[in-house]
Image (cartoon, rainbow, N blue to C red):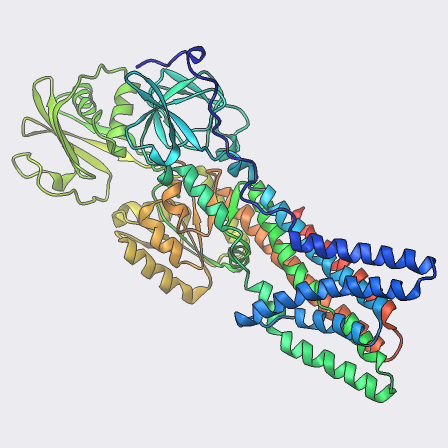
Length: 623
């Protein structure tokens, strides 16, 4: 089936999702609070100039009441969930200004709190914008090729084996194989590559890429819901659901801080006999820097990470990544390319003859070893034949007729002495495949899965930034895994592991510190989920690991892991700095207020300055 002429089909079907449809706006609540606070102060000022003093005080009280009402709703909701936070002090501050008639101070506190909420919403929006390029490209429908034309179908209805037409500018909705002779594909959203890549027939195209050239045909290799892009989108949508433990650091001291605040306020009032001192103390004790600065810093960190090609599932994983000191790596597709190459051929019948017949048969296999054999034969310019009567034991070996010869290719345990398939192949120390012609051993083909260059660089960087233990956890034979571990000077190697055994490795390694697990496939998913922080990497099977991981490298570059760790540590340092700066400045202001040196209005204005300074400091994590 050839590519159809675009001029003969209906006008282009929209396949792009609505940009940022999944994201909230700045937020109705923060907008209403901020508007009420600003309008209340402005209106009160105008009324004051008109000498309408009662109306002016009423406007100030109303703006404070709006913010207090929203805050009380939040507090009740949190108390139902057992979450006791410092926002109680903010509520007491606003309530006390209304009780004691310090309406201007209350309006300033309300403005401070509403402004902080608005800044937090802005920071989260900036974090969302770091990921919006991905979500703006979520396809909704696709064009399926039929014998008699085209059919527009919803993305969930796409099935494996379907033939799709991808028009110029359309987003690829599911992973598949290129059927057209060539294609120009824009993968910038997925890989960061600025220029379109030119692919030939048979190349794999991942969902989320955009067709930058003429219309092409694609055979679907995975359901849209299981595709690379779908996994990324699910991850991004989950990224806003996490709350970092560090964000609860201020909450852990909430009761102590509240009791200290009340003690200072009561002591100041009793010793001075001036009840207004209570208001002054509570106003400057308003913990907006503690409530807002930490999530702002961590949200900014996730935004920064997204811009360098690392998607983080919210603030929690970012904090844990900053603490990690132990790294556990999968091997194939993570530290190695996951794309074996033929390095040796032992063939009494002749290398080219052995390779040609084995490659002809392996055209019918999707196994990585089979692809490597076919690739080597094509590199040598060998003319391949069409195989027939093919049977394959998944992951073990394949057998079929090529030019009248019964050819079988597989590992040691794929064969019995008579050359017939028996049971799945066990792994040998050296990657190799045996080739049988009509039941007789014809030769062996050796393979090597090369070490990634960025793996060497990453391990060196991890050592420099304080990772005290780096471990390889592989399903391969020990000799293969040990060779890779030796090349990287790793601290330990665990081999021939099942997915469950990888989880056990994670559990054992926790004794040395928080564990960062890096993997790329379905067999790594349990370990990625079990680790303190799991990072999914890879070029072709990213979606398989993304569901279980906390972090995903969108650009298949291991150096991004070190960059993400740097971002996480800097964001956490800024967050902690904000916490102690907020506590310290508030305590100093409380002492001055308790001594009568800061009246409520002045204290409220000072606290506003403190809030802005601390939150702006937190926003440094965006840089």
